[in-house]
Amino acid sequence: MKVLVLNAGSSSQKSCLYDLSSEVLPEVPPHPLWEAEIDWTYQQGQAELKVKTAAGTSKKSFPSQSRRADTLEMLKTLWSGETQVIEHPQEIDIVGHRVVHGGDEYQQSTLVTPKLKEAIARLSTFAPIHNPANLQGIEAIEDILGNVPQVAVFDTAFHSQLPPAAYTYPIPYELLQKGIRRYGFHGISHEYCAHRAAKILDCNLKELRLITCHLGNGCSLAAIRNGHSINTTMGFTPLEGLMMGSRSGSIDPGILLHLLRNCNYTVDELDHLLNRDSGLLGISGVSNDLRQITAAIDRGNPQAQLALDIYIHRLRSCIASMLPSIGGLDAIIFTAGMGENSALIRSAACEGFGFLGWKIDRHKNESAPLDADIATSDSTVRILVIHTQEDWAIAQACWQQQIKN
Ligand code: AMP
Image (cartoon, rainbow, N blue to C red):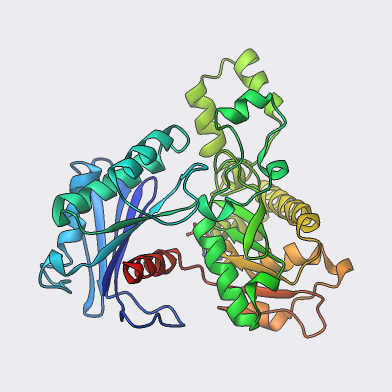
């Protein structure tokens, strides 16, 4: 069974093709047959396309026409040119899409229908960059493959069991009825990591109390009990919660009122300030990338040090805020760019909980762990590093959908 996955970001489009047996899913994620990515940030008006297969890699740039047309260009490399891995587009059995916002209506992976497309378009008001990009990916596939089954896998779905006290903002109740509530994001990653953690620990997920820390360019935590997310740090938008690469995370909303009222900020300027000019970048003035921040700290840059200190302070505070809802903890999981690669972030986060007996094995932490437990044997919680595989999680959802039918 050939499963194509499309994962649309704000300025990139990633995609991969898996070849799966229709009998059973592999325990360990297999390597895709073909992986591709378009990057629209590379040069104004240009799209940069990278493709990787077992035969090698290719890279080219071309004038960007539209997201939909560029995506078609990317998909053509599946059946033509040096990266060809299939004879005809019709060999693709099913296509899965990461869709950022499913609102409170879509609580699980769903087959794409005209009604679902309307809902994704309607929910674009809540995810103005991502949902339209997701829809364009769906339409690009319709252009080439007609009515091949397509599955939408929602980033919000894993958080659909948040209790009302966790999802409701303390603002007038009418706004809740207008959809202004906490939804949570990164759900595909949090859910994948929870399942993988249960495998690594050889336990039933329903019996585990977990905190998953997705620390990439965007950062969020989920508190998981009975296999569901019951608390999370992102909210109505992916701006709430932890400090991030260039996003502020939670700040006093009074600051926004002040900037609007007294400093002549426009709404677009505020948007830019909070999403692009804040976080590690905004404080350090160096970069949104942790590697650049630590290099600047080594050169004695005090603002870079402050950025890291705030990041750790807020990470610890948010981890602590997850604990009461799950009534204890069996394992904490670090994933995504910083969570998977930074021994410093993992040890600093856990150090704050040394008084509760959380203990990292220094040697394991520093030897590039992957899908591994890095806690000491006498630690009161297991501390795991898991490579998040959102594309594989989407492919699994497609496989299940195909088997059902
Ligand atoms: P992601 O959004 O998951 O791709 O994560 C991207 C972020 O991960 C980058 O901006 C870096 O801050 C961080 N990152 C990636 N590799 C490393 C590394 N080796 N050490 C520290 N941070 C890293």
